[in-house]
Image 1 (spheres, rainbow, N blue to C red):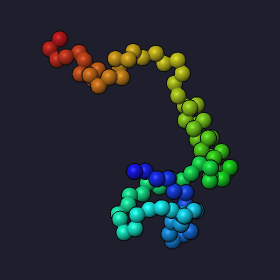
Image 2: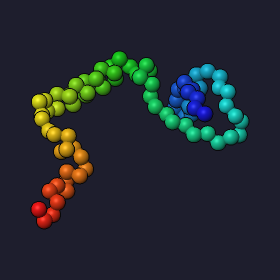
Image 3: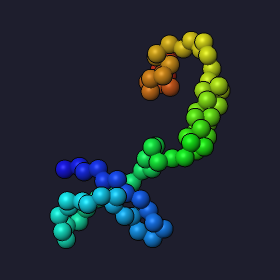
Image 4: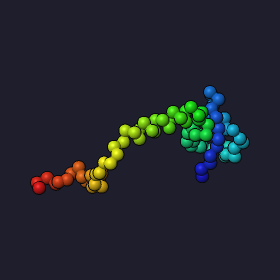
Length: 81
C-alpha cells in the first residue's frame, strides 16, 4: 500500500505537515523527493534554463534508421561476411 505524506525537513528530522495514519512499530520504506510546488521560483527557473541548454545542444534533423539504435546493430555485419 502506498501513501503520500507531505512533510518538511527541520534540519534534524522529517516532520509530517499533517496527522498521519500509519501502523505503529511496523517497518516502513520511504521514498523522498523535493516537491516541485515547494521549490522557489528562482530554482524552478534555474532548472528550466538547464533543460533549455540541453535541448539547444540536440542535433536537429538527424536521420538515423531505427536499426542503428538496436543492440544487434553493433554486431552487424556478422563475422565472416
